[in-house]
Image (cartoon, rainbow, N blue to C red; front, side, top):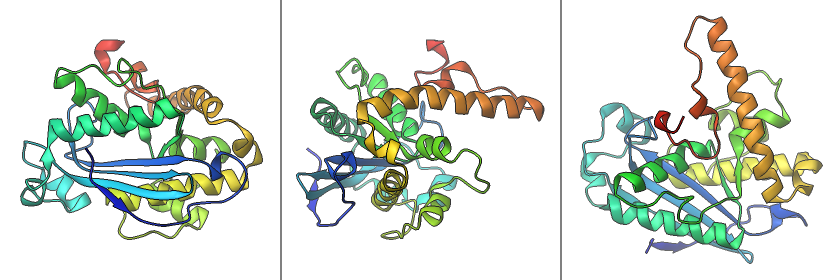
Length: 250
C-alpha cells in the first residue's frame, strides 16, 4: 500500500472535468532514460469527491543514484535506502494507476509519457505484465502535450518552471520534488482548461485520444527540426503516447 498523507487544498473549480476527480502523478528518478532508469521518489495527488489525499514516498532503487540525478532532485543514496524496495513501490504505483483508470479518473502530469513508460518498463523487468496488459487505459491529461497544442507558436521555454510562470502558477516548494511538481502540473492543466473552453468541454477520454495524435505530430515536427539541424531523427517508437515500448516494439 502507498502511504497516505491527508491534505486539504483547492485545485480548481467549475462544472467540467476540471472540477471532478483527478489524480496527479510524478516520479523523481535515477536518470533520464525511462526504459532503463528507475524511480527514487513518487507522488500521487488524489482529488476525489472534493477531498484531497497525497500518496508519496521514497523508493529504494537498488542501485547507486548518479551524481547528475542527485543534482536535479537532491535525493541521495542514503535517503533512498530508507524507501520501500523498488518492486514493492512500482507495483503499488501501478495498482494506484489501475484504480484511477478503472474509475475513469484522469491522470494529470507533466510529460506523463516519461513516468508511465518508466513504470511500465520496470514492471516488465520485474517479470510482471505491463500497464496496458494489466488493464490500464487512461485517460491521461499531459500538460506538455496540451500546452504545445493550445499555444503552439508561443516563444520561450516549455519546462515545468516556464509553464508555471506562463500560467501564473505558484509552487508549493522546490520543483523537482515529486509532490511539488504534481501540484504545479495539475494547476497548469487547470489553467489551460479555464482559458480554453474547448479543452474544458471535452471529455477526458476524448482528450486522451486527441493527445495520441497531437503528440505524434509534435514529435514529428521536432524530428524534422532535428534533421534540418543535422541531428538524428526521433525514432518511431518515441512518437507513441502515453507509453513508449522501446525500439524492439517497432
